[in-house]
Length: 429
Image 1 (cartoon, helix red, strand yellow):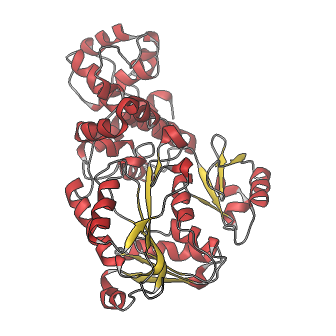
Image 2 (cartoon, one colour):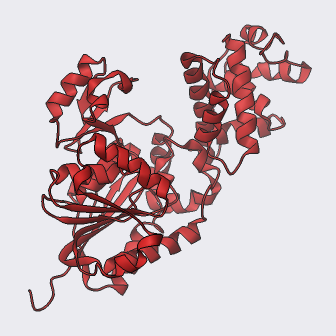
Image 3 (cartoon, helix red, strand yellow):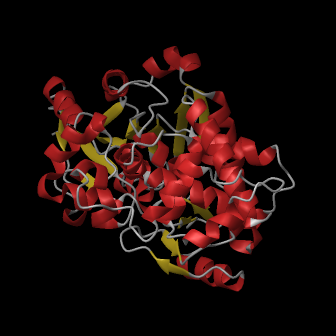
């Protein structure tokens, strides 16, 4: 594709994102690309990267459009991004907007006037703090209350693209072996500073071509997500419940840590996600100890499991505010339940699983949220209603007493985890 054609593709996709407010950005981009097989891989990558960078600058672009009295359209956003975000020179616009086939129409008189901004930065001293930090109004007060003086620093750290982290399947491969085989496949990595199972890729990495990935020796998983599984402290032979298992990322980590000895029940309310996990477990050679159960179809079975599990992990549905590095559109669009609805769901899940933990066992509550309503406040409400549980503090470097990870402090996505230990029965104390 010509550079001009890539610009037009960005305009087209951005229009679709704006129109489809109930569909996540990655789905819209993926659908657009699938319908246009003629677009090469390098072109797809450049188009997607530009769109994601624009979404990371959503509030600032909107501020500039309003300041200049310009209608907020996909085409105007792309023009302003090229000027302010990429520093495109004025003379270059004649080539990028030349009305040729698959290229944008030439700039009209009004749009040509935008070029007076060439040489300026997307950041401006008159911008409100929340705009500079790309913080949505819905969460501004909540995040300012939590982060305090570090608000802008923390929020700006979430504007950087996420690193590509890998978790080594320690049941079949050690860290050094995985690292060496990845390097042989052209992928350079460093050990993650916090997770004992992790490797962080340097720059772009094409994992599909590596033996380590093909053999199931490594899985893509953010270091913070790995740490949630690590906080569970599972051991070989344990009985473990992963209640909100999804596609099985943490289930895989738990099974590997258990060295394929014991039992894990992976539950979810979406069969498609459970089925996706099934193939991953087989690839990692740990399927033998994993039992898949649909939540809605196993309500009676679950009631019979009272006090049977050493560890219950609940990585609950949440706002996803901690994943804004990867999903910048989620700052501005809510695709699922509201925060109030989520908090209610989280409380219901904790109530459902509390009795499944055996005396001396652990209930691990986790989210990928930055919000206290979904994290500390939810745990405090649970402990007030369940005095049979007490907090087991996390390692000091991860937070105290709960694990609290942010991109600024830990170079991970935003994660929260609380380890709640069920007290021993009086007769067993």
